[in-house]
Length: 465
Image (cartoon, rainbow, N blue to C red; front, side):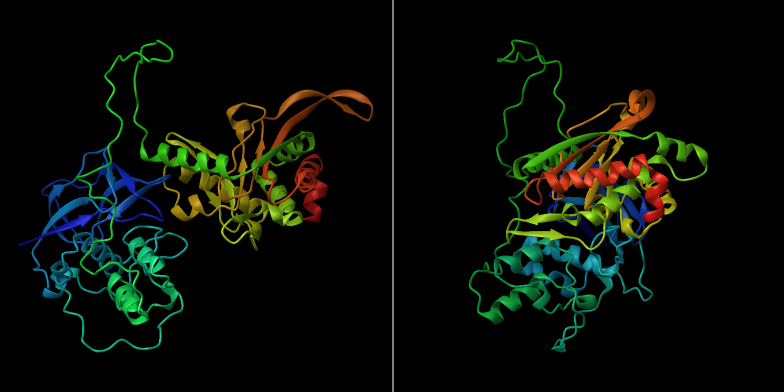
């Protein structure tokens, strides 16, 4: 019987922790390779983590609701397969932290998609789980690596890297992972490959092989603020604090993102009132047709074609303004866990009816916590329908690193002048926040008029789209 410990892997670039939402197994349960064992909450989604081992669960490291750091033990499994000698070699170097990441790399390449939607060798942009046709044996049963030299010609141009530690090590040594040949399954690049490349290049910036490159040990966390006793008196207001609620993984990620947006982006906001009477009439003429938001999304895409600078980002390191060839349209969705902005990928290729289908499906997935990481982070422009919250306007915060966000308020009956006569019309308000580094007010106003004019004359606009 061999005891195997599976550490919490990095579920996405820059992630340092995740919250245990629900254990799918219990101590004593028998698990198979790739069987989902736990649901964890990342920055904005809930992810099922499959087991890289087959065996009997002996320890669950963490209670439901507990936040675990990346690299800390997640689950311990007793397997019936002994560890191959090659598996224990890295540990002889004394690099415990490095061994955990190497174990993650082997798990990622040996058991298909370890994490749905993340960069394992078999993953795709769709985020769906796939199994290789010829699955290699479990890690514990893998024979020692052959002594034959690696081919001198890279198998593929796109580097296979699953561990952010590998990327960091290469980056600190001034190397590009694309120039490093991987020795792992399918050309996977490991720490050992990076170290070999560093030695070959004569780099002296890499740490000694025996020195672990990892975050501070969990046993010695940085000192935090002293705990506050329940019912403490706030010194500023003189009031008693009724409760203190710790910020969870999701709320901390939201806080960091919004703070970064406000601190880095010099944003400006413009508004316009729109007579949406004809748009509402068009929607009511075909109850089975696309919804109002699908039409607005179609008009937004037209506006971005006219003003492509609003569909991009600011590369501060290179001091360049980037524009995308295509639109991943983000949609602000209020969920039980908070606000998320998943994107309809490739929205510029879709018809109004197709946009309607994608919007409804994506909204449902977001509210269920099932939107993929690619959908949650891949948006290039965000549309926020805060009218669904029964408000008229908002100075929205741009979803960093995007450069603009359009909000639409509720559609209500308001007095409106048409052909010199006062009448009642269906009116809504558009509010647009944009990064002043990418354009000035003229471009922002031009974009707004494209969307507003299309909403006021939807039939004519669709005929020319």
